[in-house]
Image (cartoon, rainbow, N blue to C red; front, side, top):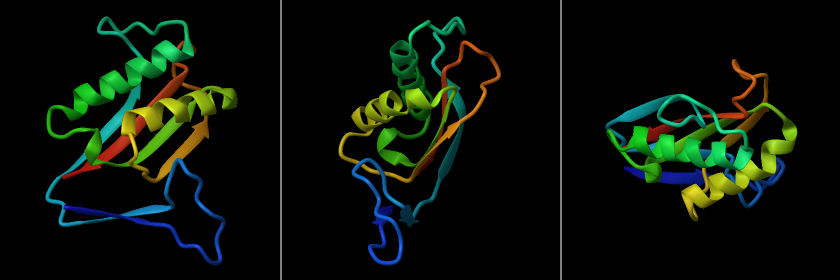
Length: 127
């Protein structure tokens, strides 16, 4: 499988250092669409702090992906933030989780189904 970031430089605003405009994926035989994942512990409880929830979200995403792939296979990510002020912390944890890889991302401020869920993240992975 080959992943080619696509960042046009003319006629569009520039992508920042933490994402790319698009990712071309060729030669993929499998795709994994991961549901919105929350920062819940194994008992289904959300810790109070944003930092703890973000840590659990990425732990949960890694566990889900481990059934078929790894975070290296993520080709698209959408974050649902309960408050816009969570964007920077979510971005920093995403960058740490993906290392030097940059992928197309979207952050949306939305009311989550449960008020204690501060962030929800869904990903698409390919292999």
